[in-house]
Image 1 (tube, rainbow, N blue to C red):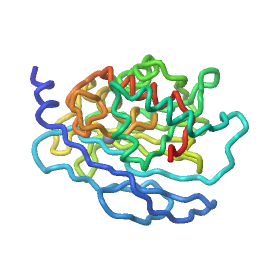
Image 2 (cartoon, rainbow, N blue to C red):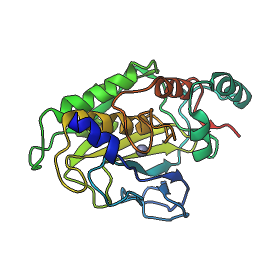
Image 3 (cartoon, helix red, strand yellow):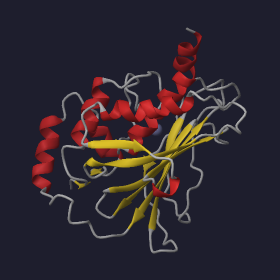
Image 4 (spheres, rainbow, N blue to C red):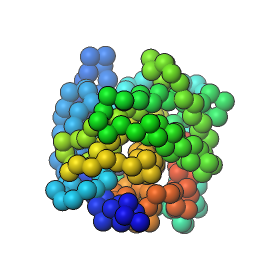
Amino acid sequence: MKTAETLLACCVVGLACFIGGQTVGARGSSVLIESSGTIATRPARVGPLDSTAAPTAKRLSTAHGEERLVTSNAPAERPRRDVDDARRRIAMGMDGTYIHELLTARDSAIARWPDRLSRPLRVHVRESEELESWNPDFTPAVRDAFDTWVQSGIPVRFTFVRDSATADIHVRFVSSFANGISGKTVWSRDGLHWLLSSDIQLAVTHPNGGSITPPQMRAIALHEVGHLLGLDHTSDPDNIMSARIRVRELSEADRATVRLVYSVPAGSLK
Ligand SMILES: [Zn+2]
């Protein structure tokens, strides 16, 4: 199982602890940027992120790079928040999850999408036949990653659309990243931590060369869709949300954690 060994041996991730710098964009939006240690201020655009990936061998490295904060009022459809009730639900459901790591990384705030059962989130996956290592099986692998998270029992559905202009979520493939990672997710949220949109980039080659295989692409996509749904990294390598991706399927803890996130409204638990 050469490819499995490659995953086990080589998965390193760009660490991303959530810290916030901010700047005002053209339309009054602010940007909070994840990087690896200092508060940063950057323009309101999707940009590169810091990575601590080691320069060795092939690895599947992912990081979510940037969080865009869009100041807006919460639409009326969003549930009224009872912080005490949310704290109680989180405490009661904590067993078997890594929610404590998420809350530590995010300053006790939960970011998630509003319930989207009847109105699925629209996903546009841009195929990239121009890339040398492009494999047509990447697209179904990525779609399957979205569907696999849905099966964990969250109140979110996805639909795949042809028109990128109408999409909530954009997935695109790149040849590789300069900083040694293999995937990157950026999402926008409003001031109440409700997610608004997201962009995922997936590399088709390993940082040091060699093509990503469709099963590896699916594993990276599972990790990035986890970020898209509001999850952060966990220290347990048996979970897909480990900073070093060593598994190819969601663990029970991955499923339990995302279900717990979606059992309470978005926002700070402080
Ligand atoms: Zn990650």
